[in-house]
Image 1 (cartoon, rainbow, N blue to C red):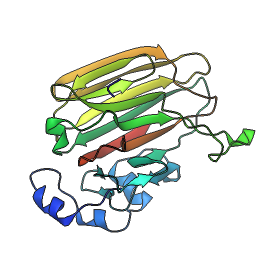
Image 2: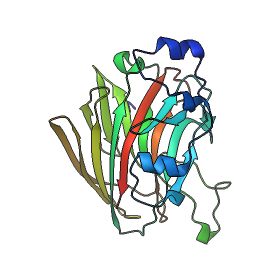
Image 3: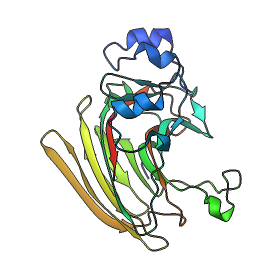
Image 4: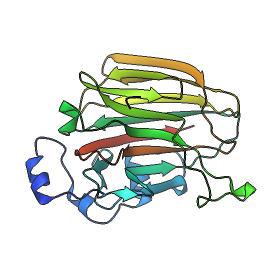
Length: 244
């Protein structure tokens, strides 16, 4: 299926035509309070966890910027710059995830990149502590539901599950809003309904498929996560997130 970061000074200087990197990306991580405020997060900031290198994440005036280049942001066994959100729900609940983002003008987004998969949003399984499970012994699985980037005669966004893929073209530096409503079922198939909009274009989707790999709630992640062999500079900005 088609399907840490070290910002060299030379790269920053030469990318003025692409994504502008704020100075504080190269310093300490922003507080979760500031992060939650800038993305208008509607839930407790105690649900937020960082999976980022200090050089791969920072705040802008209107959002949070995630960046990757080469292999200098290798965290938790993967090439990533992500934030994780842990709103609890029960199996059988229906939850909506609304987020707005922009793909910044990174060179790879104009011409493609060197290998397959690049995820920017995903729902991931996790160990159930009530059963004595821990990350140390928990099996490693690919997320059952994710948003991914593709380059196929232009840049495209797709929502991907085990048996379904819906994709659409996107423009750079223009807001994209996605609303994804998931009915979380296990072991039966769950239901996914939603749409993404950019400008005057709306792209709806809906399907039933596997959405949970165990019967404990799956957490949401946003940012960049990609195959380690990809070295191209990429950046994405999260502007808003609501989960309800």
